Length: 179
Image 1 (cartoon, rainbow, N blue to C red):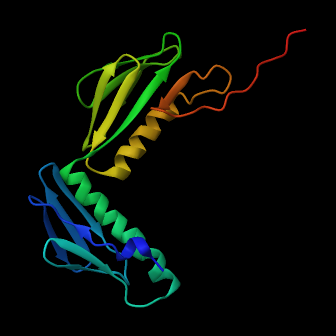
Image 2 (spheres, one colour):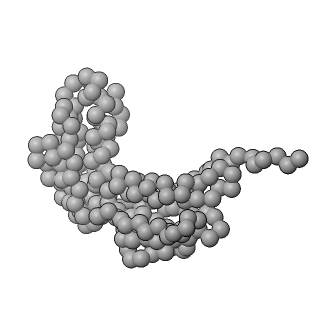
Image 3 (cartoon, rainbow, N blue to C red):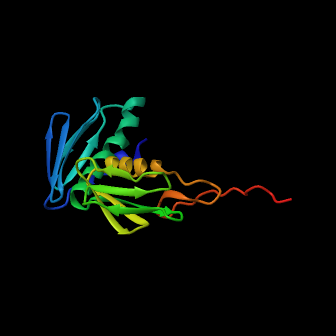
């Protein structure tokens, strides 16, 4: 039984939801997002809330029920508040420079600087040379861009140097034992 799927999605004022068959479009102050709902699931719009319904208790229907509700809720939250992932850079000489709101330049111990361009809908906020934020309205895209930045120099287990998520704990290994 999907407990998450049964919860209604609250639609705040200033957010417009349009349901056209399987296509759900959410329009808010920060932008517009759309999602095509998978086959057996349907979405009904009531007074200020969205209800996600499933026709039967088949395995596929149950698995898509909570997923669809969460995706629609993420769209509503995205167009009202937006999403942000924070990253930290650890290492001597490792830093990030802002080349505008959609371009970053990284110095990560390689022989050359790395220029990283943001896809459409993503902006960067550089707080200091070792702290940055990835912002946008699409939760999946924000997480994907943050993962790509982390992939430029993953945190290594011996000294912990590299790009990591804010608050991420790195499992440290002991180095070579001295004689």
